Length: 147
Ligand code: HEM
Image (cartoon, rainbow, N blue to C red; front, side, top):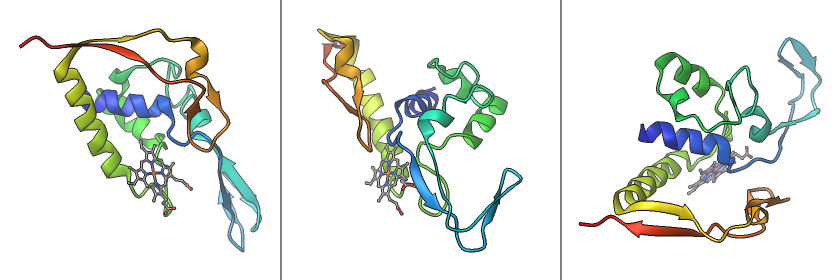
C-alpha cells in the first residue's frame, strides 16, 4: 500500500508540471501515425497527461487503489511520466523514491494525527515556475504517537 500511496502522490503533485520541449531530430519522426518534420519543437506536460481519463479513470481523485490491482497498475505505469521518459529522464528517480518511502514511513510511524492548520486556499495556489511553487506554505498540526 505504501508504494501505491507514493505513486499516486507523485501522479497528482507533478514535480515538473510545465511543458518540457524537445526538438525532433533531422529526418523527422513518426508519432501516433503522423510524420513530424525534423526541427519541429514538441512539448507536453505531465499535469495534462496524468489527468487524461482513458489512462487514469477518475483522474482528479486520489486513488492509490489504481496501483494495487495488477492489471490497472500495469496500465497506469505505462502512462506515468512524472520523471519523464527516454534518454533524458530524471537521473534522481530512485533517490527520490527512496526519500519518499523513508519520509512517509517516518511521518506515519511517529505521528497519529496530521491536520492542516490555519491554511487558506491561496496558500496552495501555484505561481508560474518550472517546478511547483506555491504562494504560501503548508502548515500542519501534528500529534505524536503515544508510546
Ligand atoms: C519526486 C521527485 C522528482 C521528480 C518528480 C523529478 C522529475 C524530473 C523530470 C520530469 C525530469 C526531466 C526534465 C526534462 O525532461 O528535461 C528530471 C530531470 C532530472 N532530475 Fe529529477 N525529479 C525528482 C527528483 C530528483 C532528484 C532527487 C534528483 C537528484 C538528486 C534529480 C535530478 C535530476 C537531473 C540531474 C535531471 C536531468 C537529467 C538529464 O537531463 O539528463 N531529480 N527530473
